[in-house]
Image (cartoon, rainbow, N blue to C red):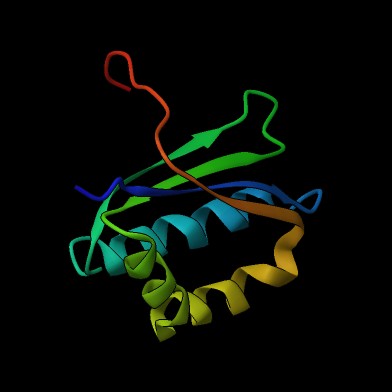
Length: 102
């Protein structure tokens, strides 16, 4: 059985652009919800200081994640939010262990 592929990105919008970024991110969530092949689910965590977010997205396979990264719905979203960002640090992971529900 294949382990799910998890993408975790730490995203820091430019000062004064946090809310604009969040609006675009929420719109993207609504745009693709239920329409991405192999997407198991995701979470967006907003820092308490309002400066950054952590985006966690789980796919059935790494191939599903790679296919979505090439999807115009994703590439167009990245083009829209890129000017708002100071940094975005993505990484790929697989589950080592899980306890409880989040």
